[in-house]
Length: 430
Image (cartoon, rainbow, N blue to C red; front, side, top):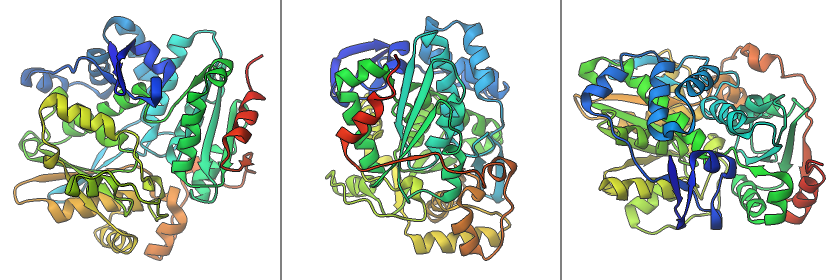
């Protein structure tokens, strides 16, 4: 598999190099040189397979012979060791529940696959994973890499801007996991990560790698659950399928669009955002004008400068698709809360991110279409806001209950690169 840097197409790397490197020159994202496509018959055959077997074939189509079929099958088996069920909510709408992994969020798929691939290709060489999180990425990455030999993880997150239970899930591990609360929002954390990757001395000293959705291994892993969703839907409904994706950093939507480019029958996608609406405004007005990030109930989507957007634009250009065909919608906190109550009245408990995806889908779904919205996190991960909105108590799943009373092990730093750099250099492998 060859990939090129979207900011400098002369920089071309293998899949293994892209995974290890994370970002290209000038902080450019890597993108596949070849976009594989399955025939309709091949798609039908894939949809008859089990999740792991199907995922191995999908990933092989991108990765090629860099990793043997047997090795890739083992890595996929280890990574995708939990289900992604489709649950009916109404006659014409269902939820793809992506929160049945160890950290109760969709990021488990990409985080665990990346950990497996990095272990495969890094061997005995030391690696430092440096990543920023608005909530769920941190937990997924921390648990995926926890205890792995020769790998240390540094996770930056915005102090006071993720839910307490999200924080407990990944800031109580210790060991090879270092968590850093930064005074600032997610975009500030992401900017610090990018500065680190621009610092050649720092990169070399720590053998830096990123585990955000900007890493190609995570992105490819997420393609697989879109196929798993369609496999659970009747043949008749597949022909009129509309998928609504709660969108912050836009990695999840990028993966879905790549699934469509492979030939998966999806009529259209809906990009559902909160009031941090850079992309919807761009699609409407043609100007890229990020505003100051606004804190919302759907905090994992509080992103004003979504890093994966250049990949979406590149994919649309390569496929000859029109960006005007990408449906979208914006939901504020008041509507998010009323939608959560609406879903609860239907017997479905949702957290804010999924509620946003449902709201835009319900408002835009046309007669005869079948809608699927992504449930990206377990409602209990947002226990405080869900309970306050619904007026009922949520039981804690064991994954959260086991960590709820543990002490936080985080470091607290200002939004200053020189301070972060010093912190990182102190942890450089000797």
